[in-house]
Length: 423
Image 1: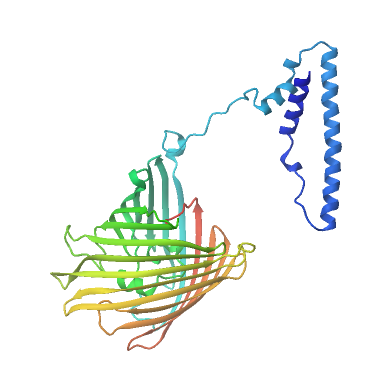
Image 2 (image 1 turned 135 degrees about the horizontal axis):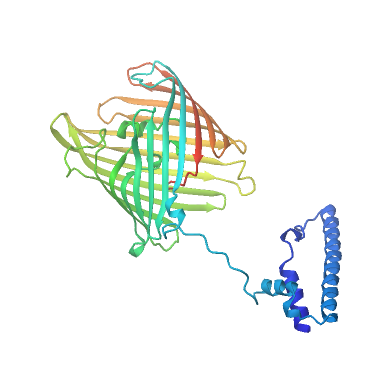
């Protein structure tokens, strides 16, 4: 009988509703009064339920019924783990033959852009344009590999592969390998797709070195976290790529490979302040004129600082990201050195509102003496996680040309489950 009472009591306590937990303690008198009232109510409910259990046991004993067949006792024993409850079949795991392996994450992202331009040299865009539609397919193939594909349709005209690669996850010595077309981690901003970019257009220095779409190449990337005595995040990546970028590289033959090395380290300065620093170096063959070839070497450093307070992290934050890069490119007149940078800052005004600005300076990698300075200001509204609006104003000063102004309105919208990109 004592065992039966223990089983029933413990089963009752295990099945106690989660919402009946008392509220957190507080120094205010109102919270203390509410706590006392809640404890009194729980005590009364406990006594009434305990009395009902006792009456049920007495009734069963009076009729000579066995307690072992009582459903209330079975329920209590199941809660205590003495009786195995009915088991539901586990959900299928991706890559093991279940249905989820046949249903990757699919997303569609629209990038609608409105632009007003004044005296912009060589501007070829539209005033109103669905600038890009990105369709993503992402899935865990099996415990050893993952696939990510992002197809873009610029201005609803051509279909392009933004990225498409297979990631091997369980290689010896904790190496991580990607095979396919990737956005090359030269700095920080180049790896961003348009939905992850901080501004409407890419920084001027990246456009000058790699073109409007940035540096994306087919090849093999190998990365690994570096062990260190400080227990810090330190990652080193080596990329061997096709080198087909038609702005900075593209020697013209299959042996004209592009090599890129990227180092990144992350530091938690305090619980509210963090810092990410990185360095990059790229070396590849570039064309000279119609038939000649030379080499292009580029180097860069990047720094990203984030402040996010613990108490008001949803409403206040600050981000500052800066990249400096420069290099040497072989041209018909000989080697030409160039340099450029951008610095972007963004402050969060509220839960959904942000303001920011960016400064750009870039020297032409092809034309000596040609440089551009520009400044941008923007305001962003994150309406929901599926919609974002942005207004941006940009003024630029190019060598030997008058100032020119640009106004942008951008609307992002997301359909489906959009997985995370490489950080």
